[in-house]
Image (cartoon, rainbow, N blue to C red; front, side, top):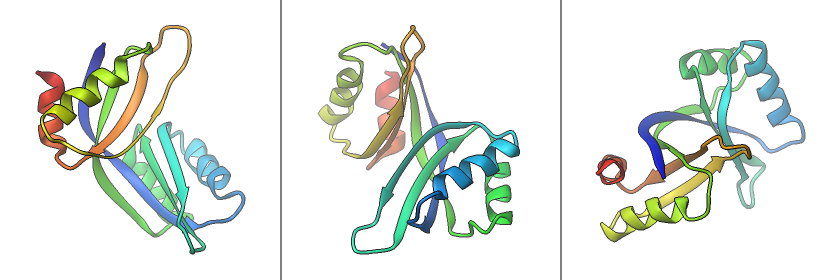
Length: 137
């Protein structure tokens, strides 16, 4: 069920939570020929801020063009990029494996499609290196 698992960097952008921010960021990255491979976002409670998490095909260039376009609150975080068969039970298999060994999931998001392509899951844990080793064993 697991096709691949690697540690990658995710870009976390803190933005003003307003209509059109994600559309603007998407256009900036698209115009720079940067592909967004996974994305998640959330509003911060009792705040006008939001967080947008991105995994791209070129983080260095993405950070550069976002900064050039006034998105200055950026950081890179280590996460695990997992490709799984897109079928029932695939996610349970990997999450059970790491839970059994005491690794906690901090957050998770993913992409999927029909037609046989793999699901991409972004996973942040309390110990990404241990989780990766467990997934690959």
